[in-house]
Image 1 (cartoon, one colour):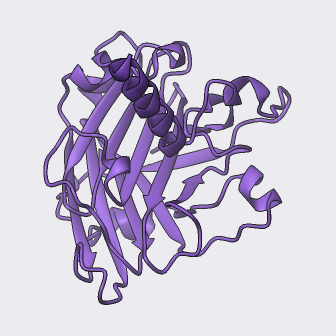
Image 2 (cartoon, one colour):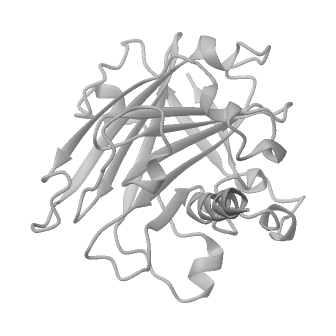
Length: 258
């Protein structure tokens, strides 16, 4: 009985910190007529060097997308406290993500890969879903330069151990403008980069090319002693109707721009 209670508490905590619950995807407002927001990834003929610096030419040219609170939190009167922006690029081998987050207190308390980092500090998450299938990826980069890759055959399999056991190639890097894991001072920002091999995205038979618009969400967990919210500030692009990072109906449409 005690083990069952502990398991129930753990599942509840995961649901809260992931920004989802069993009921939310069905209850969330949707509009079948509204087209999804477009998120562009700019082609680069030169591979991105992952160092967290965001100094490659493609990052100066790629469109920046600002993070936002979800509609449900805005309706409650909450306001964005620490902004962030993301950019995307691609070449013949990889899809690239760059993030730049204002952050007054940079936190990443777990120093290893392939764990649920949203429970232990700041985080950028990339969600990718092929248009014709139920499966999708949830990929992490932390200011500590750690990564996690989760894969779900479908949203109805959230929380199963098999998501953590999925093996794939993923590369990340990050830089901190401040001191990591020191709440005594005040930090400025952190930046991160991610490279996802296209071979990984097509391993289950999906196409990944300019003619196949995937669904995408970039999300953030932001912990800070200076925030007034209880728990982390949760933001994303595109803006979702509810604070549920697994709400596929609100994802954007990824366009590979040549």
